[in-house]
Length: 234
Image 1: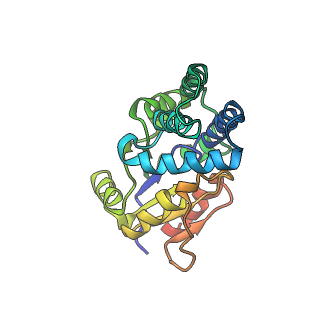
Image 2: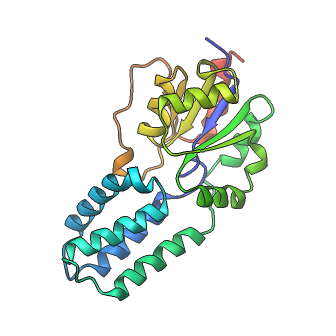
Image 3: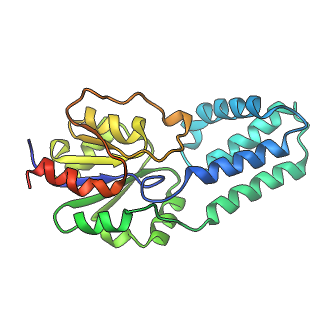
């Protein structure tokens, strides 16, 4: 096996909590619109709006808030009170100000791998928000490079791992999204390592490539150094 020289890390729900804040805001959204529709219908309409708007707004909190407002206008047949819109905007602002909380084993894992491998943070979403979270995390100086992309495609991974390493064949990507963090880097020629978070955004769901030789699933990020050592033969 080719030795791994570059390690890519997803950010949201791999290094720090993220999805749970979206879930809390969705519950608040459902409470605000409870007089107009039931929660299941509202969540289905919101998901449709998010899918529809990804091409325009991209990933992140701002696009999420705009999709909530759009959904609120639709389900109320344009009768949504201005006070509800104001509360949705306030909820989004709260999300953008929420302090970062690292997941277990993150600091120890990165510290263990940094001396021997090039570490690249590869995330998607709003540029300013992702930069804010990385700065608050205290992890920024431990990464050799940071890539904030619009979409995590096989070509994007191939380009990143060529730019910051020895190509995809000598790279490993770890994250909590099968669709974005695992399958595309495998298709690019690298390793894809899945670390489940527990909360999965429906848009990020995909079936795991269980039979692929470069796919692995770990119970936690703390198991990554042992896996990398095994691949490298150390």
